[in-house]
Amino acid sequence: MTAFDRTLTASADAPLLSVQDLTKRYGRRIGCERVSFDLWPGEVLGIVGESGSGKSTLLGCLAGHLAADEGQILYRGHDILAMSEPERRLLSRTEWAFVHQNPRDGLRMGVSAGGNVGERLMAIGARNYGAIRNAASDWLTKVEIDPGRIDDRPRAFSGGMQQRLQIARNLVTAPRLVFMDEPTGGLDVSVQARLLDLLRGLVRDMGLSVVIVTHDLAVARLLADRLMVMKDGRVIETGLTDQVLDDPQAAYTQLLVSSVLQV
Amino acid sequence: MTDAAYNFAYLDEATKRMIRRALLKGLAIPGYQVPFASREMPMPYGWGTGGVQVTAACLTPGDTLKVIDQGADDTTNAVSIRKFFERTAGVATTERTAGASVIQTRHRIPEKPLTEGQILVYQVPIPEPLRFLEPRESETRRMHALEEYGLMHVKLYEDVARHGAIATSYAYPVRVEGRYVMDPSPIPKFDNPKLSGMAAIQLFGAGREQRVYALPPYSRVVSLDFEDHPFEPTKADHDCDLCGASASYLDEVITDDAGGRMFVCSDTDYCAGRRAAGQRGRLAPEGEA
Ligand SMILES: Nc1ncnc2c1ncn2[C@@H]1O[C@H](COP(=O)(O)OP(=O)(O)O)[C@@H](O)[C@H]1O
Ligand SMILES: [Mg+2]
Image: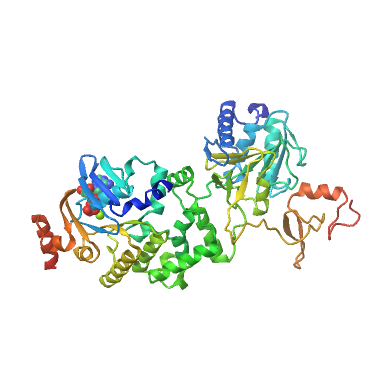
């Protein structure tokens, strides 16, 4: 942690995350290839593209869930790929957060909602039960879950509630950088809309930097400041969200955008 | 078949050497679970085959062995393990805590403080304290390696949320020397303070799970808790009805069909010693002592 605190002030005019030529292969198949981008503090970057284009692979490499084959990832100037595993895992539970598409992958289904939210606090040393419980209760309120359900298990929650609980569990330690993989994926349209609204508010209020993967261009339009379009593991277009969606340059992006508009 | 068909203490020398190596490693890294190649023993797993293998690896012909189960020397389990070593190792046995050089135990630590030169061997069913929330062995190993123990407090949090207090009363998790979190085996949490600073060597054996771990003498062992829900080594709020002891762990015993009951020391040797010295409890038989 200390290594990061020292550079705390040096961040405003430098990228939070700086990615150079990141490549990940699965045997001979390409997962993602030579991806480069900068993410600035407070920015929401959307990664779009059809299924199999390498979005999840890229996100997995960024978050340290997958080992990249080549390239460099700098987080606030620190070389992530050169870090030891303990350092990286500490980063994952303090400065970073990861919201999975399936809440089951991001929650402990056998643990109460309060325990789920409190886990990250306890993982970084919180040892006062009352304080942990209060923080959990506050966060349930923030994600629009009745705090009266703090002792219920996630199993008893709807899909939308589970996803909001996963978000609370991730944000309770006030991370700077949040990775999201299709966070509205499996949800009904009306539930999606409410979740997007909530996410937008939290991102704004907490000044979060976000890398969000989605195949849904409507989600991208609502949340992302900037878009990266992927195809066959490569980035084929990048730009401000409105620019990419309203005036796509690459032929593939034009196809992607028009197919959405037709639906 | 004659007993001479067995090697000393049943196990062959190579196996005992392998277990001793694992135990030494355990002593060098207090609280760390060391894998070992558990052998089939001539008794079912629930009967403490891990403890039996550890005891077999530690015994020398000059040792005096005591075996207790829930504090008592005379339960089926304790008697059969004691007989096993009488037969296969020919060592002397005793029921006196102070007279034993090796004590194998299930579910208790003797009340009488142990001394340097003694070895306490625990039978362990489930060595992994993180198991109940994280079933993946690969993940729990990594959590130990990286000291990621937040999950232990999630377990305690769930306890307090559900019961208003930390309801875990057996196998209460501890942190050893500020490093490894360890399951002390299903001893009552009343016994947890005895784990810390003990003069004897403490060895833990899990047969089915193929793990040993250890506490060298005078290790610092802390029971996990919250600032606002501190650890409490509780016991039944009574004195022993036989010997009058006020600070020993008690079993509740039903005495008749009419709901009569009494509280007696679970450590039978401790209780007998006190009575022999003239201490009497509320229901001590007339004329005794
Ligand atoms: N574990 C894996 N093993 C082998 N190939 C994989 C694996 N995961 C993904 N891939 C392949 O990598 C490419 C990118 O997949 P992915 O990152 O999941 O794309 P997206 O998230 O955009 O749908 C695809 O060709 C996919 O089949
Ligand atoms: Mg994907």
